[in-house]
Image (spheres, rainbow, N blue to C red):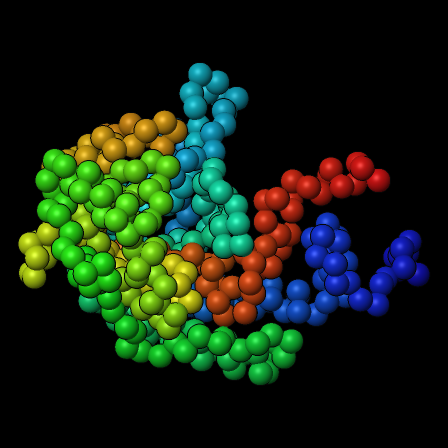
Amino acid sequence: MLSPCLRRLPTELQDRETRVRNRHVDFLVNKRATDVLRLRAEIIQYLRQYLLRSDYVEVQTPILAEGAGGAVARPFRTAATEFPERVISLRVAPELWLKRMVIGGFDRVFEIGPSFRNEGLDVIHNPEFTTCELYRTYFGLEDLIGMTEDMFTGLTDHVNALVIRSFPSLKAASACIKAPFKRIDFITGIETAINQQLPNLLSPNADVKVAKILRDQSIVLPSSPTLAQMLDRLSATYLEPQCQTPTFIMHHPECLSPLAKSFLHPDNSQRIAARAELFVNSQEIANMYEEENSPFEQRRKFLEQNSHRTGESSSIIDESYLEALEWGLPPTGGFGCGVDRLCMLMSGAKRIGDVLSFGSLRNVVSLRRAVAAR
């Protein structure tokens, strides 16, 4: 006897709560559960090999630091025995670290790893999640879009072949991922949907005017009705539902993209970012933009961003990153992809917990409580 089994293995396991509390049994009984995780491993390997073939260098950047920058998000905070007087944060994104490496001479760099945001949890959000971020010098927005289309169409073909050959329990990628992807301009798309022009978004009372538009359209205002939050709500209402097939929402207002380069829109003279977000099935899959490399413009955008943030979402300006920019960040394109959502898309999973080894944070923290209750 190699190892005793002290419990009787069920012939089937269908109840969702029982499955997430006994994930090891779920793996033994339900082949689909193991196939999803094996497919996840294949997807991550495909992304890694795609970038390595293009001469990117894979790196690891800090997860624990004194500040958490690179995204508007509430961080997890902890303390280190060595520095008990300092508040340590888990990173919300690796972006600022990776751009420091570009400044240091790494012209093509990427990282696949975890980030943490102390925010909501639902079928497509988990506080602990995996991203693939890359940065490449002299790579503009159109280059990033072309790379994204090539990467994801190739990945779709790879996944479909794997499902047929190795994972028959999974449904092949149902999304029609074929280049070129559809494009929607952020401002003109919203103006078309609401049949009126947006105000000058740089004007002092732009937030008041946009709030009126939301009320006129019977849209509930965000709990924190900043200009950026309200514009994001308009996009979620009118643009994202149009993104069933792969679609880029492009040229966001500057206030939504403080880390991106910005310019004047050729049609309406609004100040917009050189940015695109990829949506599939109305869910964001990837985000990309030309990086702001002027320390003066970056400081202005940080200050503008911070003036609209309150409570735990507010932050201190990252002076160390601004100082790093003074050494010269070459023109750079950046790309970030949510690996968990990409795995959901490719495997047909409906919940983010299904593509994580032990489910979402709610499942993980419930394990000990469930055992203690027996």
